[in-house]
Length: 311
Image 1 (cartoon, rainbow, N blue to C red):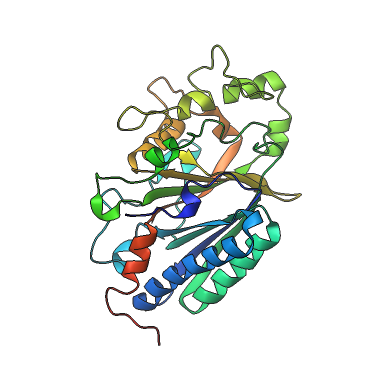
Image 2 (cartoon, rainbow, N blue to C red):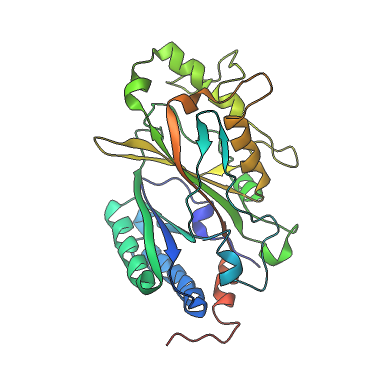
């Protein structure tokens, strides 16, 4: 049985640490073993601090995958879709590894992050680190709910985990990330009615508006998956920020990569009538990357199947 990484379908947490790395040497045998040891770190903290609800995700970048795991590649793994239309864009951040750490204790997220960095230090450079948090009752800093349309129960696994369509990578998940930066000054200057029209739902209770409009965020992101299912993405997004910079670290998990590409196209290019996601007038993506998070069994097996040894 191929067991998905725990962090893919874990329940929401209070804190998150997102780490993005590029690998700077070609000691791929050591990297394969160390990714397996990362799973041990997650498991140790989960058992030692069970009340913190620790979970982790290891994602391997689309461009780095053939070097790290040259024997096979997930069927739909491809580079992040670089899109631009007028002043709306989805920039690409070249990145080899994505590590997501989540817990209900900030100190535990920090402690795990330090151990991850220590383990990988000689092989990687840290491209970006983002600390995120749960805001109020699960809202973005814009004041609207973030992931209220996520699937529930076993439906989460159906949406986010690869099944029999790609047997070698059963239990894995396609991960796409974007770091958005909000223009909170301009956003807060809008009336409540205008904010709700842009989002396509009410602010307080997240109820859909009767006429959302084809340019609302809700309309442009409400797409079905390849088999007609909605939602087609499991989102693990959380807000981040300080007194000067605020935004959303977007993370989506899916059993395919097509759903994210179609959603991103809908937001940026919109339709032939010029309807795009108006939220992008107030929130700009500054990074973007595509990864595959293989099953626990795949990571552990790949660490030993070549007879690799760390010196």
